[in-house]
Length: 141
Image (cartoon, rainbow, N blue to C red; front, side, top):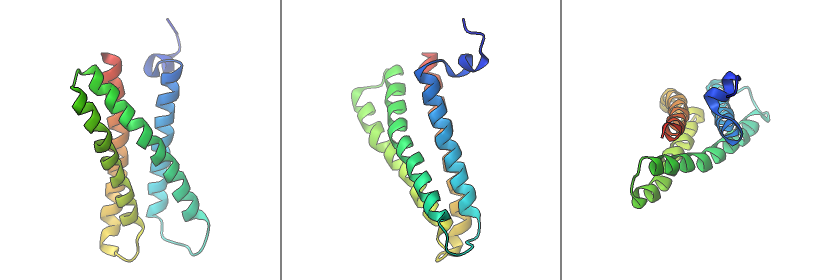
């Protein structure tokens, strides 16, 4: 038995890497949301860097979330067709992040800025929480 408290919470080996990667993706999404809430200060490389970091976090989540969903469905004894449908369903739900990011940053539609920013943060938090919940249910058996 390990005396390390983090090993108790996150497991050890590959599961710690998996949880850590999810956390990094969550932090990048939160950073993207904070940057999207700031007013534009003129031409700079900041928006491009934000977009690259968001794309990397989104790509990781587009791979990790369906894996977590299928593993969770397997542990909950769902049918094969449910596992197959979970993959495009998670991708469709994750695609909403792009929509909310565009709403949060598009000055051509000022009425969508606040809802986009709120929905982007909320969706990011719910995506992270859903992944943690699926992994928790998977570990609980």
